[in-house]
Image 1 (cartoon, rainbow, N blue to C red):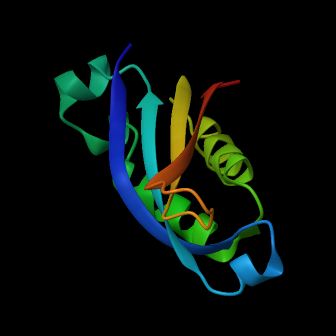
Image 2 (image 1 turned 180 degrees about the horizontal axis):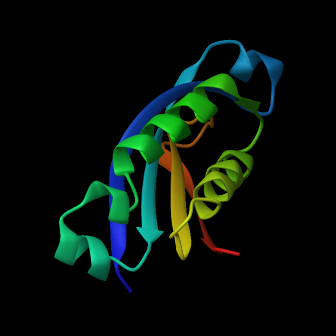
Amino acid sequence: MDRISIHALRVETRIGVTEQERAEPRALRIDIDIWADLDRPGASDDLADTIDYHSVTARVAEMVTSMEAKLLEHVAGEIAALIVAIEGVDGVSVEVTKESPPIAEDVDSVSVRIERPAG
């Protein structure tokens, strides 16, 4: 299966279970794999024949910036729903990472990865 990958999109948003945690925006790292048939754009070299990753990135960043969520799972699910609704997308994998999470243990990051088929 062909795919388009977007690595390490950084977006600030308000996220966390407690009001204190959501008081200030924090950066999330978002990794996206979009499954699609890329034969046609590979042959035509025409942007109209493919998934425009610039547009996808801008739409994801706008949505995440404007949302307030408690869970990474919710953010990942909303991103996946946005992307699978795009014509030509066969499926998507979304990983959302919170770096330096507010927990007592020494952890660099926590992430959630979900996969969704289109349709």
